[in-house]
Image (cartoon, rainbow, N blue to C red; front, side, top):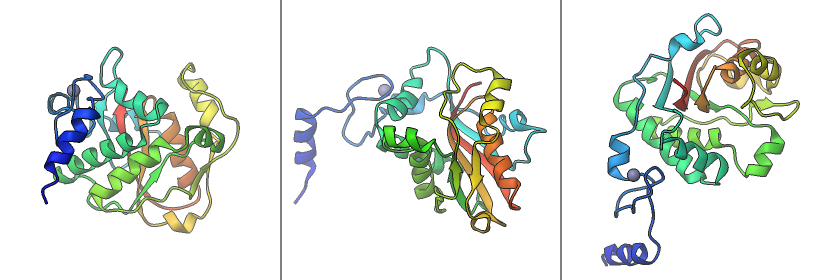
Length: 225
Ligand SMILES: [Zn+2]
């Protein structure tokens, strides 16, 4: 039996809306309408590498779209970070993953490693958004996610109001690797939600590189440009 009528009926009673422009979604559209998906302010590959230059050795650094003041696309980040939409994070990760795959980027990567949250923060939110992004990336890139080997310890405090030096002081010793042998020898992709100064991924990379030899790349769903 064709279930199309049921979908139409469900959408009549439970309309879904675009997470960027708030217009009603059509059948087949998920989270984003076609127009917002096509107009996404994407970041060209390899313009972000210099942000980490001289700080950590990285193979590839890529983000999907620009995180700009006043841009409606910021709502995507807020939706999965503060409004519980973890399926949106997975969906965005998957879309970004397919684009990377089509572009032939990161074809030799062996493992995805989300940046961990403080345990208390993860309990409060119910999930780690970077882990959810990694789950989506994993489905598209067909590589596994390891989300328990890099852990975060220390005090919870927000990074938002700190300058670059203060951010670094705040995060430099927060991460550690439980079993170095799980990472050793792999091309590892660190996954985070938004790339700002790069202090968080730098601290993660240092914790990893201090205990094992890996090739490192960084993927974030958005970046402040
Ligand atoms: Zn839209």
